[in-house]
Image 1 (cartoon, helix red, strand yellow):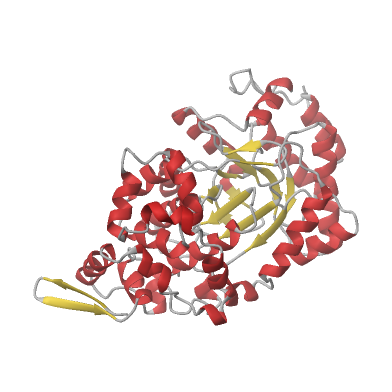
Image 2 (cartoon, one colour):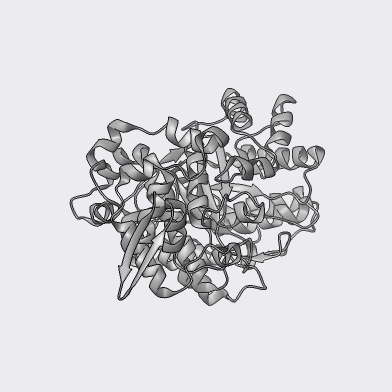
Length: 468
């Protein structure tokens, strides 16, 4: 179906919905690289005007990738909830935007709507929104998940403690974990990106986390971010797996490039559930995504990178995850060129994920060859906190020495908690107070190198005793 829009004396024609969505996207490097971006600001405006008049039913009826050849498309259409869709089924994309921003549309309304929102609908409406619209609408979306603590409650923001090390050295990892815990980070997950996907090394890291969490009864979860096939094999051997991690994409071909299928993810989820390691909930999956992954795998089918990203959220939604994370600036400036593009992508990803019912976090990050710096990340982090982001990253000094990119630090999390009055997951907050790390209001107490946790972690890592 073709779409047309006149602007001034020029009529712009878009041959199909895929092209219309691409031309309506805010400017970004990946779409320019793919040759699908609007050729001018005027064409971009024309596409937005045309998109605003597209009925949501039309989006549902015009798959961007054929049903017969793509299992993500089949998942999107087969799981669509027509009963939940009924209240908005008569709307155009423009009317849907007004509905989302209306005072009458409550968090409860949006929670009921989530199963009806396809990724293409979420992506389409986001393209009509200013940054402030994305903040306002996302802030009204609340998604609560649980494993050993409860994540996503109103007035909270969690932090993934990310103690990566370039050689997976236990002493270095343990020192970073102790640092993070003493700063009150780690309620989302203590998650390690291993330097290799060696099963023996991943098992050793799993047992290191399991021992620490069990010894101190920390109400959090551990995760080693290896490939799902490695995690499956380790679960079969009896390794202590809390969460199953996997990077995912928005097309079958993208997921194939990651070495996964939907059936494989189902198998992994069932295996993790069978371990019954959660204490307050049973959300056992952890997914990471990022705009540009489909394009980098030549698996985007001519779809703009933001819509491909939203399609990845349909994959995540099918597996009831504890955490979903857009690693927004990680792939590089070929996809998001500068701080402005990273900010826009972060707000889009967070909004689309939340609207679709996901516990959405964002790794506020950039690579060193991007036109961005830590001031840009301060803006992204602050704006996401205003939007109600579920969790962010906590990395020593905001500098991941293994992955080689810049993110957010333990101190950055303290900053946004202070500015917005945000708490941690309640079980984790109570544990911090019980350990003498914070007071009962969640404020950190003066740290001491002789604190039992720090001393024990040092001893376990074989480090010299710290001076008092």
